[in-house]
Length: 425
Ligand code: ARG
Image 1: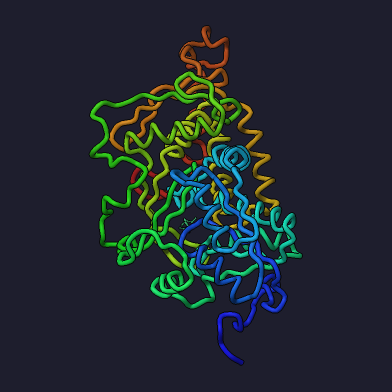
Image 2 (image 1 turned 30 degrees about the vertical axis):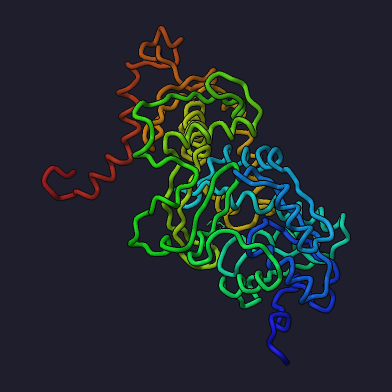
């Protein structure tokens, strides 16, 4: 058997049999990989290609240009979908309610975007009569898992192909292929670009020197957030209003969700907020270093967590982080459709019913610090110091009795462990 990319053995049931690929829905970004793919699929599979480009709020995209490029490269149709609102409402808001950070620092913007992109791919594939979905993920990352798991879950009748995983072309070969097939290649060809993924919740950069753990971040990686040392010398205060865990206003102004997220990002960018240099445990085994810029997440997650703590009891506040962590891991690991995630959401929603109020943050040269807090549901009373003023809820004279019982087991255990020693029982 020849060993061309199409002859590679198929491992999973959802992988397409090349002989059966007739019409492919390609997740198209307009970049080099997916543009080469658009031509390559038509040639290698003798198949038609329908393109889908999803707008999740990635800054600086010109969707008319992308659509035009797809058409010129032979796409049968090119759909551009503005999914920002759905992304914000159905993916970012649950993440805020779950204080979602993976590995202590990654606000999951890419991980949240993939299931939505793949869900839209399924919708448009069905509408356009496609039998196969193609994406541009490599075999090294989490994104292939998130996309293929979604397709296999939602549409068992559809197959997938991942050309970058199988076509055995490096960047040089891709550029040569592009030249040969009249695919415009933008930018210089000497320096490999960073691998970027972004949306309105954040932006990640991987590759090049970032893979060298001894290499401190170079300035050119920060295309979104102002470097903290160049941020204004004056701090800025921003207040965030929440209703039932959902951010609804900034600096006292009520805003629609997408606009609120975009404005929070803008303010954060100005002050160098949300830079994360992260070593990540990938689900595919590798450890990878990513540089993240997530200004909106840094502001809104900080404010939300603080407000939630103010309205929650000590017991809720000790318990919820373990569920938050489980939620973040499921989403990171590509299991958005796992029922446990929905079960956890029910808990997150229940807790967040109380999360109404306002948090004031001070932003200054890369730092976010909570400055003010207020909530009608705060489990807090500045007058609790005296029995009379607290309406009988708190009595300082009851403290010694409490302390005697609270410390009982510890005191007994201490005695037992110190039997026979000086001062022991
Ligand atoms: N490491 C992050 C994740 O696994 C970001 C991935 C970014 N994707 C990309 N194709 N550059 O979610």
